[in-house]
Image (cartoon, rainbow over all chains, first blue to last red; front, side, top):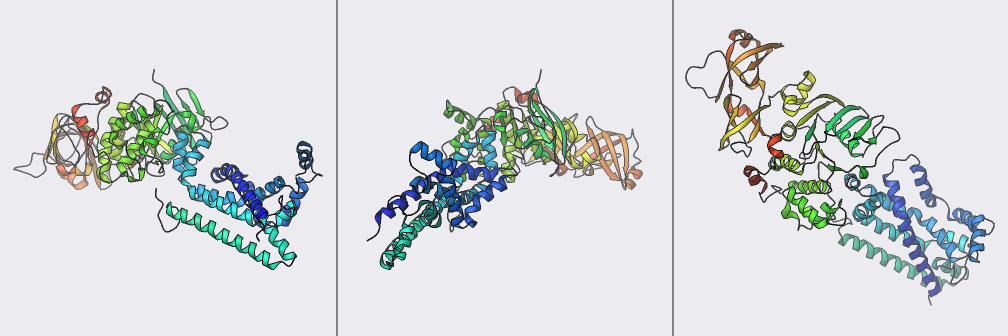
Length: 228
Length: 384
């Protein structure tokens, strides 16, 4: 049988991570795409860090930062009564940081293709930056936002190293599907590992096919000119 | 007292000082070749770029001091019309026009703006992508005018259009801007556009203001050789159409009446600029015997003779100011000296007419019958 609690946990983690990253990632991506600030390159590098760092390195720093030795961890424990490390919230924070480039980079790339004069027209017409992003940039960059959401979701479902470092392996709390598979393999239960892997594979393929066909139909994918 | 927009724009190679009167409906043309800094100036006034050590003040309100102080574009209340409209492609025509408006009374103001640009019939259109070039530019103009900006900036507003559409919108644009009563700055490198639209002309060369004055004066009397090279070598004499039929117009110009071939949609009574290249004005000392094909024979007196290499520039007075360029041997043969009576001969095909509604007539309500005829044309955007 499939380990449904792990699957549910993974889906929950991926959904919340995606929502948080879209809300926080849109202004960040917009700022990176349109700013002339010199230090933007530094911010961009930090955002991209999870792409090149081994998950264990990120996981280690997060564990230190979230653990009870750190001010943040201590404050969290004092405020909520439970530690941040090896909890769902801790796992969520780790996922958000780890998936940051997968949300920000596609949005940044698609924001950068939006006709600048439309942004200028919007500001000259008296609209604030945030209004311009919401009403002009996002509609023009729907494809990039959709791609960011899919990549973030899929990447969170598939993450392993950071989850193991920060969350450990507590069933129903931090035990995600990928850890479940790892567990099964460690226990030589190849049949269970195979079932879960197959389910995960099928799920990923279905999600990706759905999204890409949706993009094609809305005229944003390849094979169709931008329906503007 | 008229308020002014005073700008000292310094950015990259641009170093230009402008003083633009904020009179209702007054149109200032920034004219110059590409790369002369016209667009940079417009963008600095709009607040899309900062000056580098310059200063921009609008009606006494500081917008940009070139250092710390910078009023954001959305607080300047300027209107901006881009070369290729920059409409929001995912919004309907009405939503585009409504974009800069506050929530209350939006619908009425959208309708009013579209009517003002003679595009009222486009209000139902859902998709901006289906508009023709001329229609899109009219909608963009309505969008810029709708919030009643303090000043309207137009960046090469007609250059992305095909010729018939450009001619049609050019004829309309001046009347629209006057009727709306918003002071405007038009950037263009097109001579006909500058003459047709402008009240004041500002000539920019290499980022510097080289001449400022009434539009016809700037084009007719360039201050130096550089300006002359940029504004072209045609005259720009005010005239009034006497009749226009089958593409042949008779135009009263000073004490004379001349014939011109034109593609413009002209009516008797329309004001035009009469443009003739000095090379196309030939001279005769006595009226030619018998018939000759050039339609225009204008008696004139030579006022000045300037030698320019193999050519001689002859300034003439014929009730209006004319210039003729002829070769040195011809000048010698005819014995051209100041005070000589001559006949200036110009072929009708060499006379180029540019419609231009004068200031006073337009400000008195703009809707003379001959104008409404043109504006009511249903195909507001011309060819799709």
